[in-house]
Picture (cartoon, chains in turn red, yellow):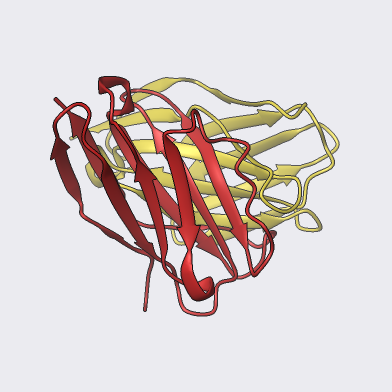
Length: 113
Length: 111
């Protein structure tokens, strides 16, 4: 596509439920990143995919968080048993390589009530 | 460990003023530096990307400079407009996924 597409744009969920967030990167971009931005805070790195290599999951805050990238394209971030502290904007970005600038999606605003 | 600092944290200026946003980083071994704009509740929009071999990049009323040796970058906005009101973030890439973001400067341009 022309840009990085994220869905849903907004998600309200009850505490304890699982949620899936989707990212569709720019076609041909080999690198894909997930970040989290809590209210008034900076960007927190979550996970990085580069081509067919094993993802770097060093930023995932707990084992309730997982992500996959199918066919080197679309990525899904899954949060199990959501907690209120998971409320944030989840941002996805892609890049043609790891070193040539990021293009971000519009984000998914997650609210856990 | 790379650290990225943006000063000031917030800035309010009258319309028409020229202004400079500052970004400093502690490790000069970078591949590129990117400036972004973020509107409230929105994602990040890329403004300018400066490769490590470059000194500056320009786009319209925006000019970004890079001085690796001193660990500094500036974003210059000419003739500011109310529509420029947003948070501006700089991001330093040291290779691969190792991009460190500053906390941003919140800019408010008064009409």
